Image 1 (spheres, rainbow, N blue to C red):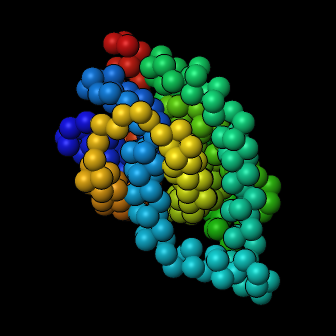
Image 2: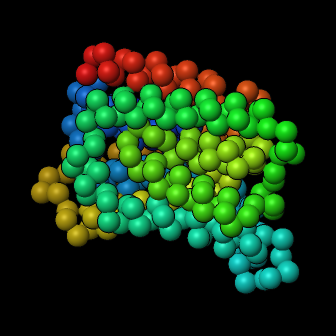
Length: 266
């Protein structure tokens, strides 16, 4: 695999992991559009590790407070920390038992395009519902168990290529009347265990089923790690600012254009 291919895949992973445009959909389409070979499990794991490091560094204070609050009932973050763990279970179970079937049956460009389009309209509804709500916007420390489970089950749907984990959890947060900023922050905090689990799962697959031939070096993987980390940090900042100011609309427009291109040409 050439250096430019590693760079492109790393940028795609770093951007699309946190922007609500579907990272899995883009990583499926990139080899088709640019005629790449499959990047393999090792590089997949490294790119996930880069985005995991980005979210840990960016939200280091929040994650520290959540970790400290886990076993301190008097802490303001006690319930939120357990809620995040609880909300991670649906996606974890779907990934554990359904990933193989999804990989085998739902990775085609037609499904990715249709799913991009379908969820774009759901995101429009979520944005409009939230902006027209007469209730005061909720914040993270006001989340109820029902709201958390709703967002957690929404995250499980994101395993379908073309959905977007960040997009569907932000939309679910908007439906539960979280403010745009709180919905986005909760989406990223909720994503931390899932991104970690996905990276570790791919790494374990690579260790237990190593490829007979590897087409990239340790330098390739180090480059991928660094770029996905740096671009991931930038994407988190961009997502927080854009969603807070104008909602999901810019991402919805991009998703619809991308879906149209996929369905027309693939």
